[in-house]
Image (cartoon, rainbow, N blue to C red; front, side, top):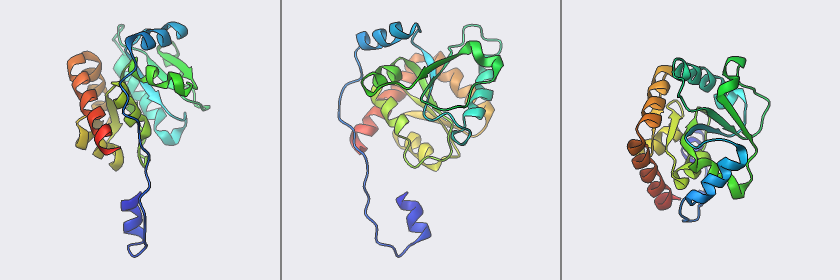
Length: 197
């Protein structure tokens, strides 16, 4: 936002105000197990966190996830965390978990239970869900058309960005199919958040 303001009003006096995160460890396995047991789900899902609306890129995520899951009976489900009226297409209904609003005290366990967080929005000023997921031990896949999200992933090594539906499917394949790569990216992302935020 500061860079944008600098381009729009180069002579304006500005002050940067940001958020910060406590340096806490990821949730313990017992908390993740309890979260999943309470909802009757297994860990390892693909997670979307945020408002369910078109401007957040959710229709594009639904379409790419359908391509990813096609022909893969063992593909993890897509979990939606947050509120909104945008529903998944009917052909995905059996592969989508509705977590709804998750209280703050359970949010980190929801992130930690995911194999990967996908943020398909190109309109982000910070991307707090990605930072929260990294601290919980989960890597990210982000829309490469968002300069902010792409830069977080580039600077941290905590995730991948995509520029096409095909690249999103490839990134999902990698993140859900290679836990060692996913774990290393999540650790890099967490170190970045602790250092920068």
